[in-house]
Amino acid sequence: MSTYKSNDYIVQSVEESPLPIGYEEIEKAAKDILSPKAFSYISSGAGAEETARKNKNAFQRYSIIPKLLNDVSELDTRISLFGNTYPTPFILAPVGVLKLADDQGDLAVTRAASKYDIPFIQSTVSSFSIEEVGQSGDGPKWFQLYWTSLEDVSYSFVKRAEEAGSEAIVVTIDTVTLGFREKDLSYGYSPLADGYGQGNFESDDVFLSTLAEVNDSTIVDGIIKQINYPALNWSHIKKLKRMTSLPILLKGVLHPEDALQAIHCGVDGLIVSNHGGRQLDGVISSIDALPEIAKVVNGKIPVLFDSGIRRGSDALKVLVLGADAVLIGRPYVYSLAIDGEKGVSQFLANFLQDFSSSMVLAGVKNIKQLKQMKIVCG
Image (spheres, rainbow, N blue to C red):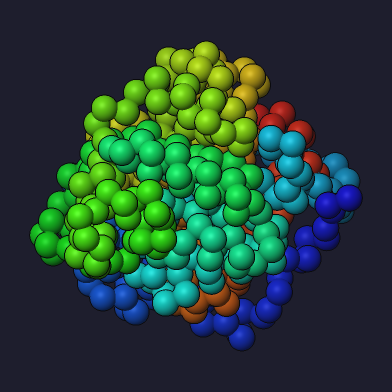
């Protein structure tokens, strides 16, 4: 049984960690540590950042109605996805160029996530290779795929992920071209161009074979040329389904019709996401998109949630609204910048404590009961 008392996840006292408790304080501490352009890259959204603000503010419109006087002395937070059981409904979202925050980057995050058996989704543009991440920590790992203009490179990444023990493939579908990120453009900054995200590419024989000569400059140029692919469409997803036995999830779904088309194409799961407000500005917040997508999917495949999660109470709301699991992004990246692996570990301990306390105070003891709670918007 994956049950715990309300304080089981506290692994070190807050006095021993330099990591602040609240998200806003974590963000501020990371801003003080990171260079202005690095912090801007992690924190900013596209355009005028309307969508980034919506992701945060929309949560405040949803209110849970607790149902009390239930025995919640023991919580069971287990979920099952694609034949695997995880002790909590949380997954660390794919974030590229993590070496920008800490030299150990993805490796530090996987080690921290392993302590809680939380899946880590490795980005295509990670700072370390699929194989290095696969060997770091003994926790579950998924692989996120940015489709490249040379599909053989994409298939090579998927094959390597399979061989490295990945449990799922997450295809990001809202990045067929890069969003207009005004702050990055103002700084003239691209961590990809600076070589922070080439771990998978520099270790891939198929990719390297496409270069006239192999050096840091040609690798970076090759990544930038191949990573945007506006021709991506449903036929690619169908073909990928035939190329791998791993579950395939689509990340970036906001429209109910896309959700239905994904089911028709045999996709195994969806991630409702607007990329943390970093792609198309002015789109619907992820939490506002979630209920309708959960409704049309109607339990046929898992629906996961991404964009805007800052606290355990946020996660509580999206699970009530129909999500089967919750992705966490920026908070763990800031924690990585503050105190490396220890920072991520402490953040997860605090987040899980926040979530367990929220469940107790809401009067539910397992995820099934949580999904039956009442929530209002207004």
